[in-house]
Length: 308
Image (cartoon, rainbow, N blue to C red):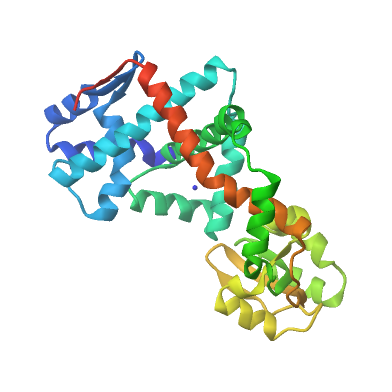
């Protein structure tokens, strides 16, 4: 989502939070917590807290700002415990996985990589910190799968009872099936568009060759509930016939063209179709509860020294 701007940004944060060079040095060196021998510096804590402090309009040294930083410190502490536990079970998150998730996030934002990085700067963070959060999130999911999910059960009777008493949830929705081609800036979008219109280039091949949208690998094809689409997209699709291609229009990430594939009427879900959705819904609160218990167990066995 600054390699060049990262050092400059870190320096700016030091001056923002500390005021003088001497104070900045103390902030860098001061320890916020030690978790099983692994340290969290006050500087690191403030780097992770900067975006949320700015969003809430809080000064780091205000009572509210300190309370927020204590909450974030608890999260950082949990992240260390999870990393240590993952190491014990040889669970890893590769740089490739993190980079792929980062690129998907950039694409979903509709921004160019440079725009995304600028947006991170406005939120008082940087790409490295953002990728660290991605790595921690992936690791959390991996540990949850390994240590928690296999211990959470939902019975067939519970699933069946939920389906019987909540049938309105499974009446189905109109489904929009369409294809997206996001042509990044710098490409000759007019030439690509004319080739699609003339039939010289299929929409699927154009998406695979040129699109910056996450759907590119699938030839640009996307489907989902029609009524959950933004009003602008609904209006666009309703004005097209099946197989028809929209005019070009510009977004933050480049130039976009949409092809309508079809809009299907609602179809009630059968029990077998609804079953995985129900299981996921019933398991969610149980998973959250078990994960909190698991974190609590890790904290109870850890040596944690909070120094702020």
